[in-house]
Image (tube, rainbow, N blue to C red; front, side, top):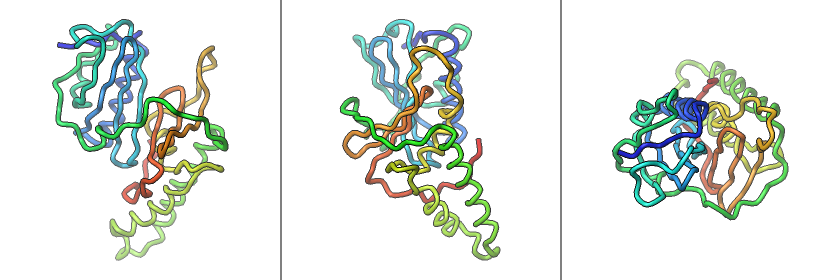
Length: 230
């Protein structure tokens, strides 16, 4: 049984919160875990947003009972959450599951370059709030016979596929970042990296101090995204 020793109880709490948010959108969510030495990356895909979310977790030491010094496995997010012991700052890796298609297409590990034009955090949050308000207003204006899934999806696709600032980042990626807790206020501590936008090939990555959201540039806008204010 592979045991992960997290850096501290704060890391354990943040991991548990991230997994809880993924499960909120998909009770059967899976996550792909990649660990090397004292770094763990947890990849998930909340279906309402069609983006890849990445939570970096610091480990206190290389995990126990692993294979050599690396770990790469897809597991149930719910089972992993149940194994997190915040007081002990540990988590037990569940049995592997058959990975969903997205788990085989992850963002590249390197080659990221900064992209200009990303608005400040408050402006990003305002863009999401404006999108939520517009979605509600437009759907409430629809006559009852037109309040069907295809029409709601069309409105959602139009709103959430818009880009923020002078970037190619769709608003849906920012909405995902906020819903997953990545856009909360940044601690004023040394070594905390600010918000940033990066590209590598067809990928765009919104980096925050609490996690990243990555999208492929060629992906179509999301139609099934309704409204979430969590």
